[in-house]
Length: 174
Image (tube, rainbow, N blue to C red; front, side, top):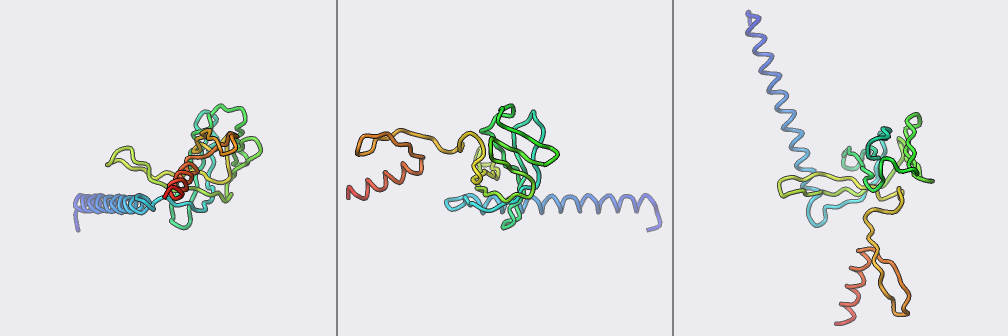
């Protein structure tokens, strides 16, 4: 321990190994988080709290949330709203984002759906989607289809409702 160069090399080696251990720990947490939220029962809907709101006018509207139940911090992207939408108001001084009469600001409680988005089998990403409050022109995940009821009037159903109708018809046919 008498040489400066020896101590320098020893410290550099310890720092390199410490950094590698940190990265391995983070990768392990990320892998296990993806495992928990993938699969049949992987999608979860949980309460979250807003930590930060994107106030840059030129980028896609988004905000950062933390989900206390799982300790997950992530960005909720509002990709169904364009950055230059005239109804979108970003207020950097209040740390808030508004669309018509709905406002989301820092420390607000929101409801998010946690899911895994698989680009490929080897490339998966944890996604957070806003479920409540409804923010924007219309909920982005509801596709409307016209279906006729027994009386002949038109009704709108989401994909989940179509599945429910098909299941009811299958049960009644048996």
